[in-house]
Image (cartoon, rainbow, N blue to C red; front, side):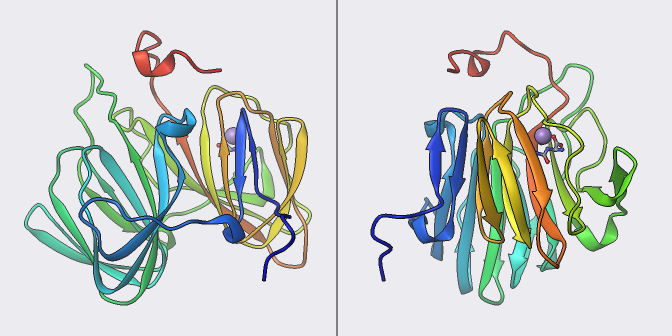
Length: 252
Ligand code: UGY
Ligand code: MN
């Protein structure tokens, strides 16, 4: 049933809100019984790509030329890399360094949040290694001393990582304490609950299933509304200051 051209999705120069009614599926090289909803990529001006992979039981994700982070939204997958194999279920995640051959096979129908980014090496630190863990194994800390806003940093606090992926849980009524404006860009998937997101000079209602991209310095603020906590998974570039890199240039 169409909605006479109405949607909450919005595309502005410094942010993007994509709601599931506007998702269009595509296939990416190497996928088997799998499709991707590509939420953002360098085609949008982002310095990373993020998509949701929907994999049938027995299906596979293809390879990648960049480093890759996966987070299991739903289902179960088998990851084989470096001669090792592991099973990941909901909230399980893995970091796969650039150049590491691996296979990801769904053992049950699954949905994965996938983030891919070209690695920015550092002279002072070796690139990170394969990491497999679960959000359940990570402890949370309050943001800005607010116990109603808890953050889990999924990747270790090490300079070798050039991006971070965190989960943030807001109790009903909790909010960011400030309108943030910063160099980092964000890719965000709403996992649970909802609220109001300020993006640039617009305020949007957002709910589980939505995707948001924020360009560097996009004004951003979120407040959770409703009777259940709001939770999201959020990417940001991190730990780098090589301003001369060509991929930082030309942004509007
Ligand atoms: O890590 C962050 O920058 C985070 N506080 N931003 C956000 O939630 N929009
Ligand atoms: Mn932020």
